[in-house]
Amino acid sequence: MSEPGGRICVVVRESNPEQFEHAIVQSRQIAGILELRLDYLSPTDLTPSAVANRVCMANCPVILTLRRKSNGGEFAGSEAAQVRLLRSLLKVGAAYIDLEIETVEGFLGGHLDSLRSGSARWIASYHNFEHTPADLSAIYERLLRTKPDIVKLATQACRFEDNFRMLELAQRAQREGQPIVALAMGELGAFSRFAALSTGSLWTYGSLGQGKESAPGQLNAEELNNVYSVGQLREDTAIYGVIGYPVGHSLSPHIHNAAFHQLSLNACYLPFAVRDLADFSTHLRKFAGFSVTIPHKVKILDYVDNVDETVRLTGAANTLVNRQGRLFAYNTDVPAIEQALQKPLREGIHRATLLGTGGAARAAALVLKGTGCQVTVLARDPRKAGAFAGEFGFQYDALERGANCHGDLLINATSVGMCPNVAQSPLPPEALDYRYVFDMVYNPPETRLLREAQPRSFTISGVEMFIAQAARQFELWTGDAAPVPLMREIVLQRLAMKQN
Image (cartoon, rainbow, N blue to C red):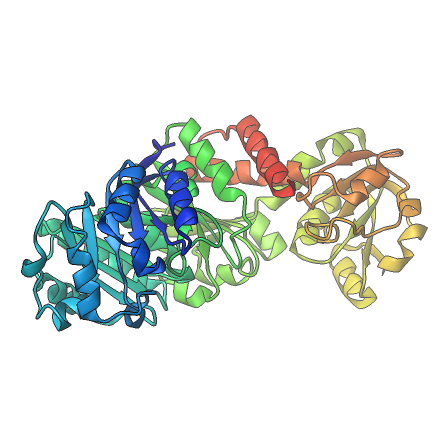
């Protein structure tokens, strides 16, 4: 984990003066730079003494920003009023003052020289909340003509490619010795925020928490520092990630990044919220490997070079490994289920009931098929259950007839009982006549199904499968044994936080 602060800039944008100052105190625990968005405050709260006091409170470098409404801010005054107010703040101790290119070109006639007084460095900024223009170089050169100390570009990402275009611009500025902050906004632009520091940007922006974001797609500052260690990323860092939509709930970044850290590997694991897999697919080989989740576990096979036997049998992949530009696909759910079921498999099972017909159920069916036991598939739609069971030579029935089934092992491969619907269970208590009950749901770790089965059954949480599949992914990517105890500790810790 990186040290608190570093090159993460937290944006303070409260409209109430007391809340503004409280946010400054909170922010300095996790940020190396603070941006004070003065446009959220009333002009009466922007006297030089009041601003100087807040700059002093920050106890770190401060950026002052007074963004006009027409440029995405809250300041309702004219350009003349904006410049006049900023002139009065030149000597309050701020390290930087950010002024949008529109005011520089309009009121100031295209250059910042008339505002140079005191020690503050000037940032000439360009924002586009609709798209990332085709010619970023032209915008960069337009900003340079104002003779700023730092240039800043923030544009809305409409395609994943926009991340790389913005990062390439940052690398150009770095080669030219021009200080820059460059990032793509929005959900699709998240990668540029992670990679900004390793490709030339002076800092990246983070929020104090959910609902405190100052721009679309802004990430949590505490997680940027403590989960992703963005200050330690280098150009040669191996980047892994999870592809899916949505991915904000995923625990995978927490466990894989902790594992990389424990083994001192130069690697990082990031979330990639990908709706359009075709758009993202051209960039797959730029990364070291991926976890693949809903809804892309089948479609991803259109873009790989080799498939493992587990993928051929299940028809889906949850893991990609990039080996010298060739993509190898695996399904780690199959060995993970075998790991989770090691006790019943060792002791022997003769009759099993499988709930569900989705991808997880298919992986479980492969494991059960190998045991030679009698299996009954239950699903809400008997036709789906029949088609699924027919592929494996299993029996089938409607889920509502689950009370008629019993045996050695029950496997829930549905999402029933998953958070937030924790009061649900796929079967009533009287239907739980099994020696072993395995629920693939891992959030919460103990589902209603498991609680109601415990008086009669040995229960197995979905946490065991989740950890096992993640450990197998880690080993496929790195060639190293996964730190399973650490992974389990992180998962249980994060799940407990979600429940509290």
